[in-house]
Length: 497
Image (cartoon, rainbow, N blue to C red):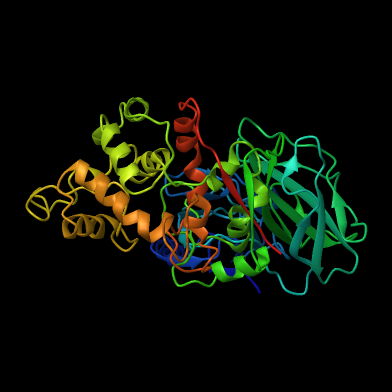
């Protein structure tokens, strides 16, 4: 697929006033033109009507900026001839569903010394979907990776078995990004472009696990041997690249584990998730609409990535357990807005509905933004600042808060269920969750993992669309359970074919 878009700009000033006017008009039209639904891997090509002075074709004079006018580390180079500029995206592509600007400074010069009369600017908005790869046709392209170690231990060097299309004489270069670092920080695991031995490349480095296990993004660049890659970013030249994810931990935890076997492969289940009506999303910051890529789904769906003392809390059984007290819960809820002091209400609701109290509190903290959300504080108001239904209603678990208009539908759900006080919302939310998920006689979604993925009916009746939802719940549950003197911990670990 050719992802190059040519922008023809008659951009250099000549002495004729009439032509200069045409130049300014063209620049003005570029200012008001916004390209939408642009692939995150888009490589732009800009063509001029005069040869360009090579030393002025640089990242100072041609830039991509974000919606806050911050420079994005794109790569700028001359194209196939001296009248063409190629602007390649930042490493692993632009962020989805974001606004960017392509800006060409008036400092750009032709070989005859002519400069632009004024800067050129084009706006573009990326599609709201993460990508796993580039797809330049007829060039080597990695299509999948198998890992020797899942999870990777911090004393192991990961090996990658690569499946590649158009693989004759292909070479590979691998970079890795730790999510503990800034987004633009990558380090190389190979030593330049490398031949694969029987399709496999082994890292030259070990990686660190951090305090609670560490997620890594890898980028496998591939190109034809002894040939400069057709494209480039700040890491390297390449013909195509492939993005995947794995996790590094210090040790596998086997305490209190129970195995649950399923008659499907992980890949089969991932494919089902990628084709459900309610599109899986990956919520990295605040955007709730960015469709997750296949490899993001696979990372969070693979139990092997989370077999340490921290990660496996998403497999904790969520039925009621004795030992936790209202005082324990109140210490967790201190400073958590409207939830503060509601420990007894949570404990009563947990016991009444056979739900783990640690989970119930954790879930409420996540869904309410630590007690600060609109749904937790009386619900939606109209333009006159009156409550939508004339009185405050409360929803602490995001029940009914569908993505189309979460605050409206979440408020309506609270009103329809008569959750007119925080205590009623806590009890009502627990009563709603228990028979539908944790104590559902058909699906028995009694772990965070199964609430998200529903292995009994894959792709159906899943609590959240965010693929990282179960993992995000862990910290609060683990913190709460650590305050219990003798917690009853049982972890149900899925095993696939």
